[in-house]
Image (cartoon, rainbow, N blue to C red; front, side, top):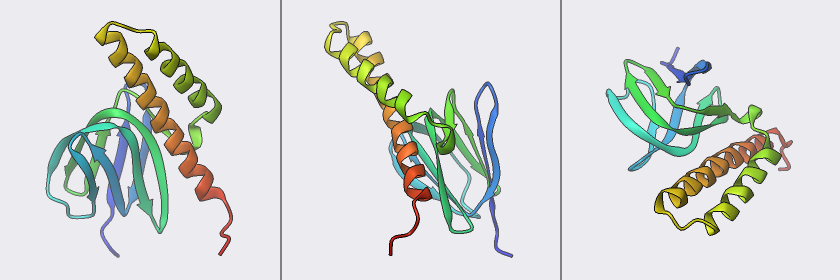
Length: 143
């Protein structure tokens, strides 16, 4: 049997995911990286984006609002303030949040307020990416 990775996605409120996977793909603050079994130990800061993970040829996603990822001995641990599996994302709410944050950003003059609006937009985009990925995964093959 081939080696697997244990992927743990943890927020202060809950363990979002604890699963055996074949591959994890994340966007760190300095670029995208893929983790396969027997990866060297690693600690990196994550960007606000999606985490893709593959198990038995099925790829799934989770929206992750930044955080850190540690890789050690075939265990990938992601600690984030907020995270949602693609099946949990409320797409309509994410669209509303994005539109609200974009409207607020245009009315802000203070750099901190603009930054906070941009962060809210990034979080909404991550949720929307996860929701879109889930919709594509659930569509029947049209080959």
